[in-house]
Length: 318
Image 1 (tube, rainbow, N blue to C red):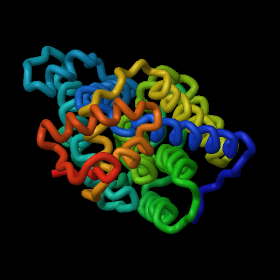
Image 2: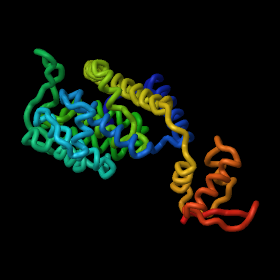
Image 3: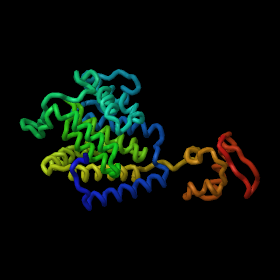
Image 4: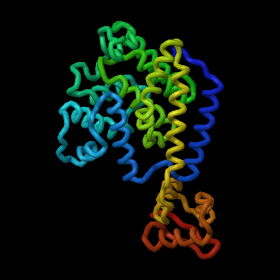
């Protein structure tokens, strides 16, 4: 059963602009950041998602935990971070359309924090802000059926993954299937859905922007609750995704080295023989002389095997 939402002109415009930015990122070879940057992005993602839920640990403290250093902080906050690190380490192994994987991720994320980690709630629950009940979730006996419908939507609909991921995120917050941990699971699972659409979403700073716009995030959830459909929240999250892509495009990155270019080309080449012209087609921004230097570097360092001379020269990765 498809969750209720409309495809508005604003949604179509956002999807189009996101697709354009993804194209630019692919063309600039920014799709897979360097190892150190990936590590920093993961730490930032964990810190941002947990801070929204009240965790007090800083980026420096989370980095220290990753390096097995001692950190002085509330035991609950440390456990939340350690659990999140384990989940994000396994992020590529989760099947976005598997309800069992979803429960497994929650069990790991909330291990030692609640008794019912990995289990859907059977009791009534409401989201309280201050002294007011902000959202009264569906009754406990309905949760299993609603979550089965939601995962059926993920599996069977042909909706664009960008829209599907936002609709899933909203519906998850609305159903509130767990006693605790719903917010962090919503943000995590949206990333997992988007990663199947394009691997670059593993490294996007989406949670960091959500943290910065926390009030707007909750307002978008509230607007969707009041309207009875996910449309306002979908529009909001698409704007967040576009902003995250802009950050990647606008960030000052070092120029690719000859080694970087060779490694990128190796990934795309799939073990075939190629010419200097083929190499230049991949890296339109470099000159013929730079391409020749790159290939010479590859040959001299044992990465490439060279065959033939002059125009008939071909290369193959060893």
